[in-house]
Amino acid sequence: MKMIVAVVQDKDSSHLSQALVENGFRATKLASTGGFLKAGNTTFMIGVEDEKVDDVLAVIKDNCQSRKQMMAPMSPMGGNADSYVPYPVDVQVGGATVFILPVDRFEQF
Image (cartoon, rainbow, N blue to C red; front, side):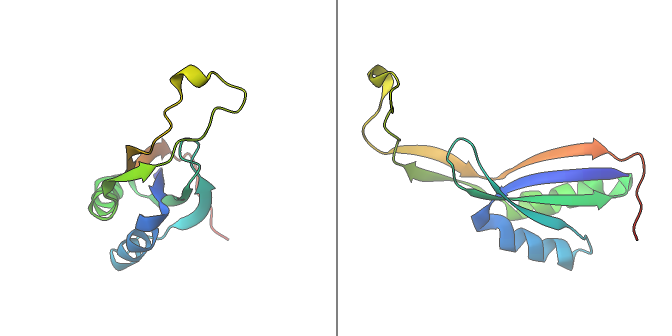
């Protein structure tokens, strides 16, 4: 058995949640915040048998698309202003960051 931990952008969260249910996968959703953009994310915890891992990954890939987004940089509070870029920049956001962990034991009460 494996535990799939998928961190997705909030924009993709509802689509992924619905697709997981439609494909028979149960997941726990956790609100989370990204460190780089300080934006909302959703972390999904999905427990599946080893042979279903690729199926879950396909659902995640189909529903979590990366996109470009304009980001206004934060000012360097007390930091080095030499590398500060004062205008918005395009950054790649979305998609999913997925971790697949082995599960030694699973209990449901």
